[in-house]
Image (tube, rainbow, N blue to C red):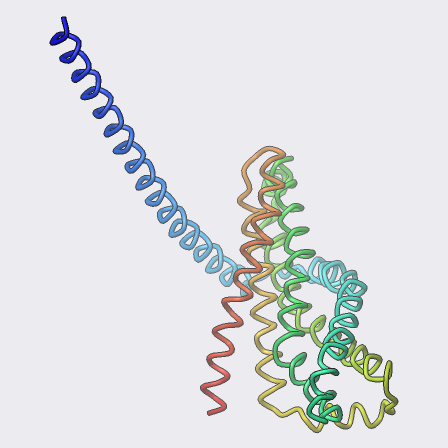
Length: 287
C-alpha cells in the first residue's frame, strides 16, 4: 500500500510539473504573439498614414479648391483657440520669469532675465507647448468630428451627392492647421513675453521699452526662423493625425472616443519627434 501511494504521488507530481510547464510555454507563446501583433500593428499604421499623406498631396494640387471651407476651418481652429493659447502663453512667461529670478539673483544676473526668457520661449518652450495645447484641443475636435460623421454615414452621403469628402473634409483641415499653428505660436510667444514683463515688474521695475529692447538684442536669426519653420510641421502633423483617425474610425460610439484619444496621443508624440529632429538639424546648421 505504501508503495502504491508513493507511485501515485510521483505520478501526481509529474502531472502537475507537466501542467506548470505547459502553462509557462503557453504564457511565453502568448507574450510572443502579442509582441508580434504589436509590431505588425505599428508598421500597418505607419504604412496607412503614409498612404493617407500621399493621397493628401495628390488631392491638394488639383481643383476644385474648397476656399470657403478652408477659411471656415481657419476661423474655427485658429481664432477660437486664441483664448486658450493666450492664457497658456501668459502663465508660461510669468512662471518662467518668477522661477528664474532667485537663481539669477544669486549670480547678480537679474538683468539677463529678459534675454534668457526670450531665447527659451522663442526657441523651444513656446512652439512646443503651444503645439501640444493645440494637439489636445484641435486634434481631438477634428478626430471626434470626422469620426462622428463616419459613424452617422455623412461621409458616404457626401460621396453619393458628388462631393469629394477627402478634399472637403481632410484637405481643408490639414491646410488650416498647417497655417494656423505658426500664427498661434507667434501670438503665444508675444503673450509669453508680456507675461515675463509682468513677472519682472512684480518685485522690480523696468520699462516695457527697455524690457523688449533687451529681448530683441538677445535674439538672433538662428533663434527665430528654425523655431517658426518647425511649427508648420507641428501643424501638419496635428491635422494629418486628427483627420486620419477620424476618417478611418471604426463604426460605433466607442470609435468616436477612440479616434479623439488616439489623435491627441499620436499627435503629441509626433510633435516631440519632429522637435527632436528640428533641434538636431538646427545644431548642425549653427555649428
